[in-house]
Image (cartoon, rainbow, N blue to C red; front, top):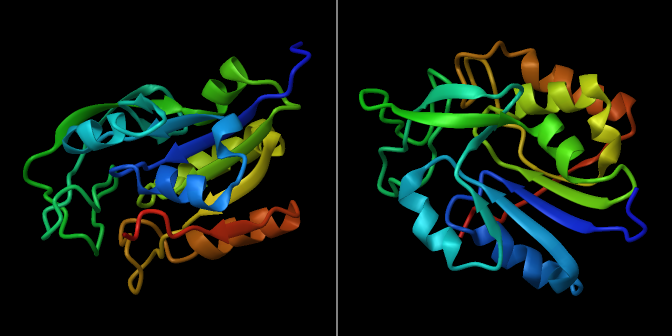
Length: 191
């Protein structure tokens, strides 16, 4: 076990690095953190590589595999991509999927950090947060997370992710609440 506690910021769904910028604005000790950005969209990698972060050119999921990633097809083609079908917002290009590697975040955290490290996890991963959070909870790795930031995307007929049942979001909110975990809204990808 390491004698020194690491400070870690994990940026899940890095887009073009806005969350890294916001992290430096909001956390006075940000330079003390090891920063990791996860982004499956190759169109965004060049912008992220200019930031003070380690870029992982993969998506986050509940297993290690390859999946079809669907890029955004709106005015900002770098935004709104997803691994999920039937995403209502973001004008997703479902006609031209790209193969993307995804990693099991719970395993990656266990392989790279200690339970006593201070970990800030931000997730804005367009519906994939449900699979990732379920796995973090089921494996107990959620207890390694000191701050959870991000967005739970709406599901069901009135939500943004139509392929997930409407019950998914309230069920996740209840799971987090029952564990005493607060998901703080994070606007880092909204510039």
